[in-house]
Length: 277
Image 1: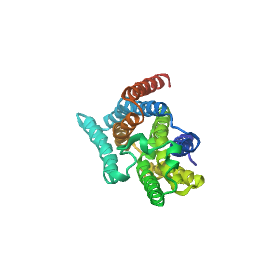
Image 2: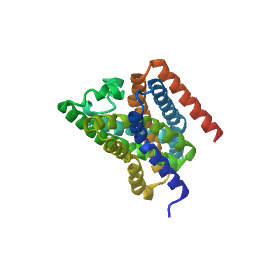
Image 3: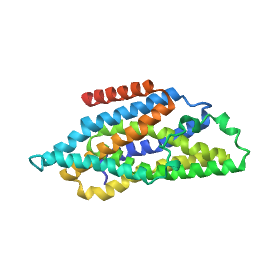
Image 4: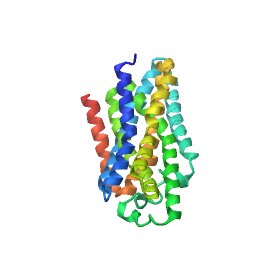
């Protein structure tokens, strides 16, 4: 029988994952993406994740290790675990071809669309095939990439629900433009809204799948040492996601200061939530 905390952590992860479907819906039902709102929202997500990484996750890891070790070993294990998390997510990005990686924003917002502009390309068979390929590969890439994010959300909720909730919302906001990047190319290649929405939605299910796999693999080994490693790694993963994906995406969709305003707001809201909860 699953505990309420496990179930709540899983539901948070599921919510974060299916937000790719929100991005898909926005792409279909909005003539133009509100880039200012998207920019601030992505900056906000980065602020939440950076703040919680250094103020909550990293100290929590250090506290777990201090219960087990003395001297400088707690600091050493925490730092090694932190950079192991960065290395893990960095390797995932490294082995994804840059041209196919939706997080490489070399063409920024121009490739993620207003519906009217892309519709003009529908008649070109070569472009349709290319768009379909881009959409399908993007969906596969996101499925692989979102897997560790699902573990991050789930394990954060398992440890402290007051931390898990803002992380889930931050990752959900982060997933919305990813849903757009999957659904739009597939829709304009096939003309099938349902198919594009379904594939976009399924790409986000990597996160709850990551939660299930993480729980099944780690549940028998969850002790103070394991939690110390996990939470420092989560901190590293979230810092990497914020600096490599969220902030560059925010600036690509809007302006530098809008991204920074969102970043500061995210930190402030996260700080207030940790003080109040």
